[in-house]
Length: 221
Image 1 (cartoon, helix red, strand yellow):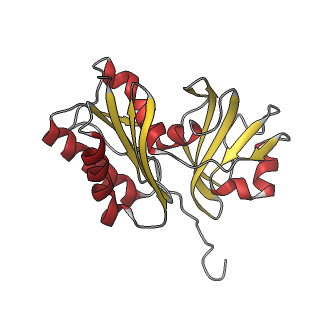
Image 2 (cartoon, one colour):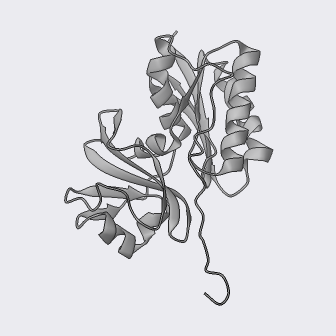
């Protein structure tokens, strides 16, 4: 029997639960829709466990993203890790989303966009390895360094649909239509879980950063 990991994420518009064995996908449930985590996430986790058996470890996307979705996903992960007596690893939701893009590319991930405010991650993805090229950040208007970049870049998430934003990322930025996957969450957590490098259940916290927000001018300004 191989080492089995179940992973899930509810940080964005996709609620997704994935199951892997020795790094290979064996099951997944992914549904696109707002506010599904509270009513369906635990049910889908149970379905995967009933079908494929209890995993040897759990991985969960800890954000940044939707406050409510991240909190529900992390709470479920801690409760099940404690109840099933198995290790848990938290991973960046943006890194897991980047992992959905085919390897050998630079990837910009955007999430929870509200006007000029959103979360952003920048990664190099190759052969199952997701390497951060900067820390995940909360953007409010101005992009952080090192943008714009001259390299070819795939942009995913809501900002990928904005030609103006793509131009600000760089002259070779182009949209990708890849979705965040629970399998990718499980695969990112799998090496640490397999080698006994799980997170402390009490200390593991959501990666909220700071909330994206839009500041509107006061009347008369």
